[in-house]
Length: 171
Ligand code: FES
Ligand code: FES
Image (cartoon, rainbow, N blue to C red; front, top):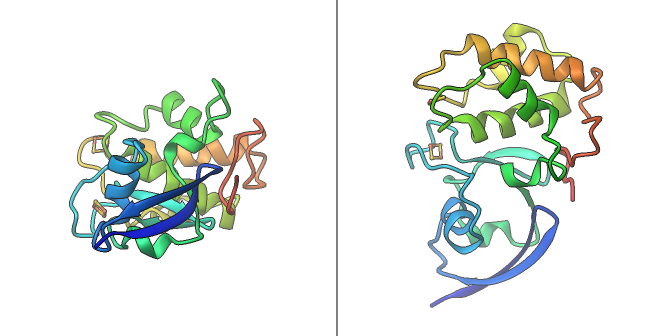
């Protein structure tokens, strides 16, 4: 029997009928149509499905959609401000932080959370902050470089200067 779930996704309030066993990642992709959140493993190891829930990075394959009741969910689609990329998206672009791009949304969402907690991370802190995310093709050097570049672009405040919505439960 389906159950109703009401939550906010990228600033938009939604109410949907879902199977109680539906994972949040499937809800985001199949019900909300937000296919930027990827599924890399379904066993909570790769981090491709990372989104922000009430400002915190969460692997969306590790919870049911109904558990997001009343939560504020932000996906990769909610980061840019119109045509203006979020500084982390721009930094991944500028620093070749991706190759196939499959893992990228998860890395960027985990990176947004990392910078919201630690606006000026060292290389080691970035490695630690992103240790739940796996990339099979870029290698991690350019990913770390991208996060550092974004930190500099954001002025070491953890807040985007573009006016784009950022972490911490952003609408
Ligand atoms: Fe969620 Fe891999 S799909 S951690
Ligand atoms: Fe291909 Fe990371 S860019 S898996």
